[in-house]
Image (tube, rainbow over all chains, first blue to last red; front, side, top):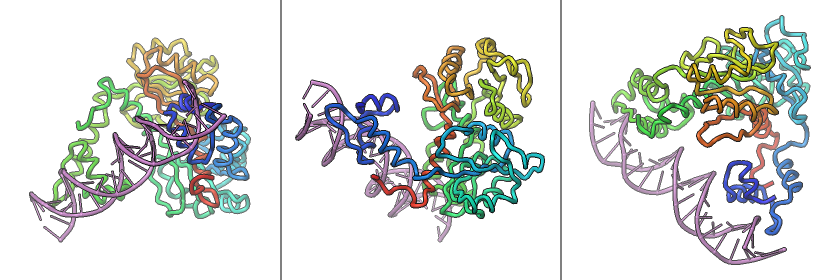
Length: 184
Length: 184
DNA sequence: CGGTGTGAAGCGCTTCACAGCG
DNA sequence: CGCTGTGAAGCGCTTCACACCG
């Protein structure tokens, strides 16, 4: 597989591809380009940890359930071990194949399973409190769907997904007159 | 409101704040910093169009429903006018306050309402087909939740939200040994 | 030749440093 | 004085250009 082909697929330039692969110390062959199997192997080794990552999800509302459904069965490397909610009408049940437990069980499960990553799908008003609880339990990485900036210790990695902002971005860049050239 | 305060809130540097505001031609006062009301006004004028943006959502699965619920009532500037699905058991009903219509109505609604933005929450296998249909109907901006790279005309703005990739990113950056320093 | 590997230049965003103003 | 406004420098990613190899 040749760099320009990879470039087209990823929508970047071919130099870009070659530089990035160079950074990972992946060598190609001037005659045949890069060996596909090698590529997959090397990138896989770079990205994946040795063992599947265990994940908890907190907040079994519409969005939480959707995500449980979304991950159900996919990505063997990302194992959702349990979902949590403070609403007793949701706990104790199995949703999209995942057990829903009360918040009180969070520390125990995180500790026992060695969970390091959490998905946060609670209302914005609860986000900070729940995030703090997750980190207290031992979580060190959070995928945050709540439209709130979380205040957490330095060592915690937070990735925000703000659907509203993303939608506004689309709206912005599709304005009739196009995006303002600069200034007002 | 003073630039360093804004900086702390946004987690950037104060120079950054001043430069960005400068780019929008927003002036502060050396004595009192920036006038809060002015700031909100200017940024609002820059971001928001004159009229609310109309949006359609296609794919009323778990995720689609979650998003309908998520936007329900919020953001008056982003108006979901209707949801679409090809499954007859979903169409004709009202979900989280939004009408769910059959795919066949998409062109008509988009044209009549002047919709320019679409949210795509169909399975990956359907994504390309549906995206093409949306663009054919007149949509020029797509918020794409399907883990698929869409092939669309140049002029269409696409924003991808790939939850799986985001979660993998969190997993990657929270590996016990931290992210590899570079190279393998 | 066609494609990789890579120094060197380019480019845009970020930070520094400081003049100037209230 | 403290904070804004801004030229200038810094920095990292991207692109160019081309030697080299099969």
